[in-house]
Structure formats: C-alpha cells, structure tokens
Amino acid sequence: MSNYKIINSRNIFIITLIVIPLTILLVWVLGLDNHRSLFANSLLSTTILSVSFFLFISIGLFNGTKIKNDLGVLEQENIFFRKNSIIEMDIPEIDDGFAGILFSLLLWFIISIAGSYLLWMFETAAWIILLNFIGILYWIFFRALRLVFKKSAVCKGNFLKSAAYGFGFTLLYNFWIYMIILMAHSIY
Image 1 (cartoon, rainbow, N blue to C red):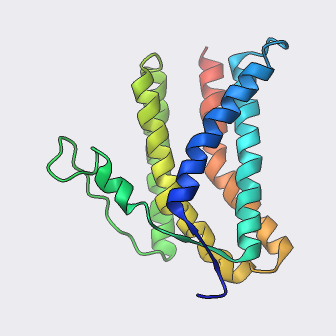
Image 2: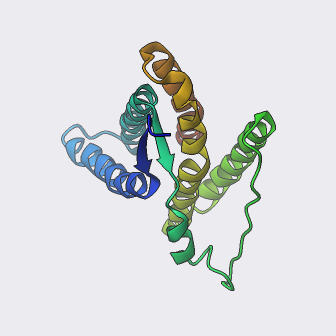
C-alpha cells in the first residue's frame, strides 16, 4: 500500500463543499451581463463540475491514489446517523464484487428517480434540495469514489486507461444530473 498516494475523504468532502457553491455562484455572477437563463446556468455549472470531476478521477487513477475513509466521524456528528435520533438508518454493506456494483447502480438509479420526483414535487422548499444534495454527496463519498479508486492498481502510470476510466465514471456519475436539469426544463 506504500506505493499509493492516500487522500483523506474528509478533505475531499470539505473541498467539494467549497468548490460547488463557488462554481455555481461564479457562473451566476459572471452570467449577469449575458442574461443567461437558470437552465443555461445549470448546464454550464454542471459541465464545469463534470470536467473538474473527470480531471480529479483521471489524475488520481494515473497517480495511483487511494482514499482513506475518515468520514465516519462526520456520520456520528450528523443527526441523521446519530444513535437514538429521530431518523435512524442502517445502510447495508454489500460486497464490492460484481453483485455489489449492480446493486449499487440499481440503488443509485432508484434513489435518483425518487430524488428527481421529490425535487420536482417540492422545488420551492429549499430544505428538500439541501437534503437531496447531502444524499448525493454521501453516495459519492462513501460508495462511488471508493469504487473508482479501487481501479488505481490497474491504471497507475497508464494515461489512456486512466482517462478512459475517468471518462466512463464521470459519465456514469454525472449523466443523471443532466437528466434532472433537462426534465425540469421540459416540464417548465
């Protein structure tokens, strides 16, 4: 394991919480003179974040990066995961083999459809959007990135393989965001 670079998931999570709002804010502020619509700003922000995600994954795979799961402390501090709280969830641990990947993708698809419906149904309630965003980030940091960086051993030092995996995972993990934006735009 000494040949791999280790990144703390807490650091990635904190940087993400800073970068995403700043990107959205900058796209909105810089677009004031152009009078872009919310739809155009959403697509532009998502594209910038997708390119950043692609670069992060591709460079990480090329360098042989592994992620250290140190977000367990955040789980205990969060009201949704605290013992004896109002909302108590047990998330089953699934094997990381082929069945685990299929189950994760199926669960991701079901949750994203349910999340899209909730987002459409309660769009004026800001706290619903916030809860969906937290759920998305939770899934990315606890399942998705862990699965992505398990490919570091295969991709380390191979630029084309790293870029191919980076593109595939970026498409897989960000395509549904574009679908939500397009569905919301077509409804309104």
